[in-house]
Length: 195
Figure 1 (tube, one colour):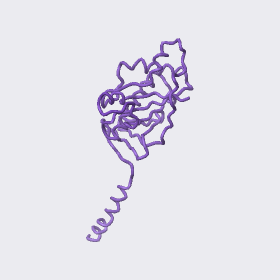
Figure 2 (spheres, one colour):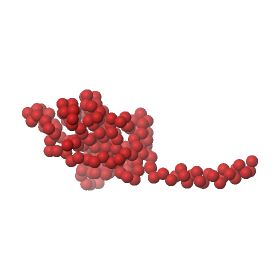
Figure 3 (cartoon, rainbow, N blue to C red):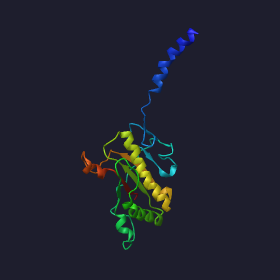
Figure 4 (cartoon, rainbow, N blue to C red):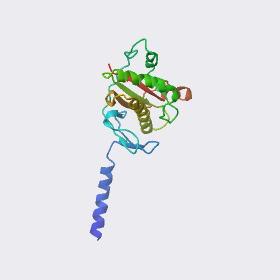
């Protein structure tokens, strides 16, 4: 029996070293969702590939998505009521929340109408956070914010292939500062249309 114990004691440190050799970090979001983030940057996911945060699912690190700078305004009928709403490319969230506020329903509906009327158009929905919280938590929260917009679009009938989501967490603040007057502008989702 003693040779078996000696063998286990000799192998155990090797197994610990192998198990700790990963550069990936795992964190739990507010709802217990598991999120993987490596040193390479923000987590990305295509909303159409089924990866999402929620119901115990995981989002894994993907290749960075090249972001296309927005046009001044998406192509739309200038006489339509939606054209003013389409110029709005950001919606904002409460602290530590991913629920869409009622005051942004009309803006989201205008973008959904545009995407349904223009099936060759696509949009990247970026999720952003303020600087509070860990990097991993903020990536997960940004992902949930972008996914909330994706779900809204899906419920309106927008094709899943037209919408991609990406989370930048706290990495791209809109306003520099370390108080609520800056943080409220950094808790957002941004719509970036492809050319």
